[in-house]
Length: 329
Image (tube, rainbow, N blue to C red; front, side, top):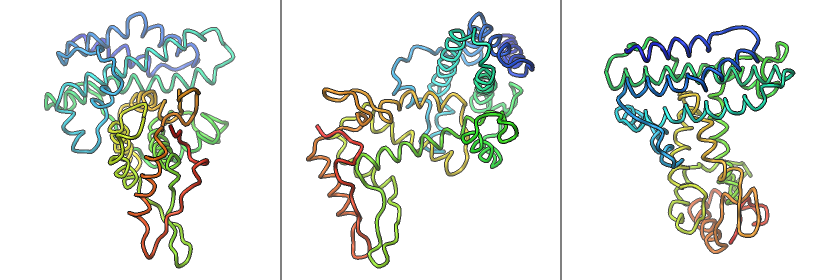
């Protein structure tokens, strides 16, 4: 551990642990980051790892480098350089965004609650920026603990409980919810959003048992496998392979509570935005623009799903075309 890292860690965690007026503390944190903290991080990262970063402009390339699609893929990524480069870049990009936005609204003294919410997330980013070094030290130097910080890799159930209350009441609502930041829970929402985006584009949700009308889910993997055979006919704003990668990454949190770096979810959302929220379509702007294909391809996919899923026991109802969240071109 070098003096460059020691200086960054000392200053970053001083801001992360500072108490008092949340607006003042957030302004101080962002001022520090913009006037020297960012440079301290970059210098420390380059000095410790001997790796440069920041030149990657392709969002897809960053997703491919930073987001593991399985436990085995995570283990492999932690042994390479690209994983650490991508996460160092994502940390600075997320902090750049927050600091710029905070500076634009720094005069809003009445927004104390909002300043507090944003600061609590920025604090998570600072802690995880130090944890990034620890991950590198443990995996590449084979020396766990060399950077003097630890993190629980799994989301405790209490975190899910309080995170759900925050979604309902907001942060720190008079004892109805805690103020602590539970940003990792957004990974579950990303996973659900991907699933519903695909299901609603195709108009496929459940299969029905013929004997009693019981509803049974259709695995998302079944839909993705079918789409994979037709992907040449589908117009997506981002790579189909990257969508599948993000789905598998989110599965690790959804099903096992495995946490990642705090900046991962918001950076993934930036990448997914045109797929989930839409954008330009032929002649219009549409929330459905993230999924476009010809009517022939659309019908071929749905017909294949019916052929694969329907049998003597189950039938597969399909939504009417005009109710599907898709643009037919």
